[in-house]
Length: 104
Figure 1 (cartoon, one colour):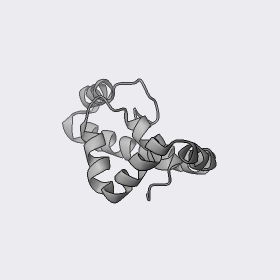
Figure 2 (figure 1 turned 30 degrees about the vertical axis):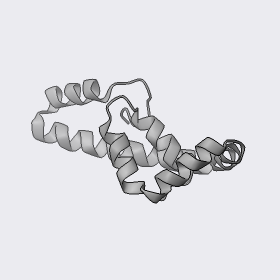
Figure 3 (figure 1 turned 90 degrees about the horizontal axis):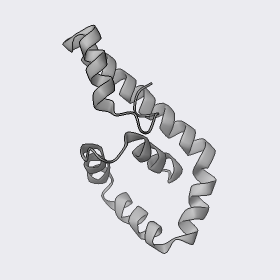
Figure 4 (figure 1 turned 120 degrees about the horizontal axis):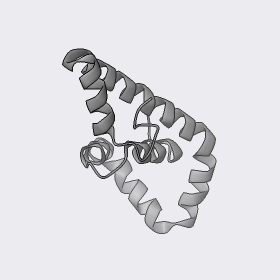
């Protein structure tokens, strides 16, 4: 998998290495495929392993509950914005989406 499952591994470095090794077209196909599969696997793991923990965590934190409600109201924009911001790791977005049961 890629940086979607491995926090701390810069996706740009991984993508650059794959692009240099396999070329622009195949490197791009491999990067997009690996990123999509890695994100889906991470989401599914977090969804089924930590969903109960996430619900109890939401019940304890009023601020997180409000944030989760706001993200739920503007779901597409929130996920898109989080994916565009380069300092937010993809693994963190996958963790949040899975634990707090954001629809796949």
